[in-house]
Image (tube, rainbow, N blue to C red; front, side, top):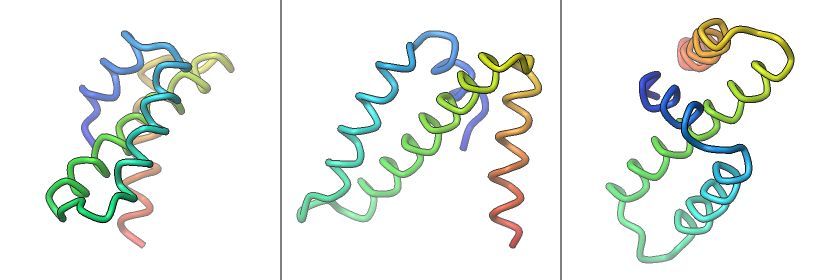
Length: 82
């Protein structure tokens, strides 16, 4: 998870574009010939796109961009700590 990437995705991409990209990456990760390295990169991209989608949703509900980004980061880091 990289907050600068999530921020850029949020600021430059629509929800629709992010959702379409997420579908493609999820399908790619299911291919038989996908290497471990490919899966690691794909997983990182999926996490960043999901973060941008969550930021879009939170900002639409009235949360500031900064608070939405920080909230997602805390959520991810909190799940890693458990």
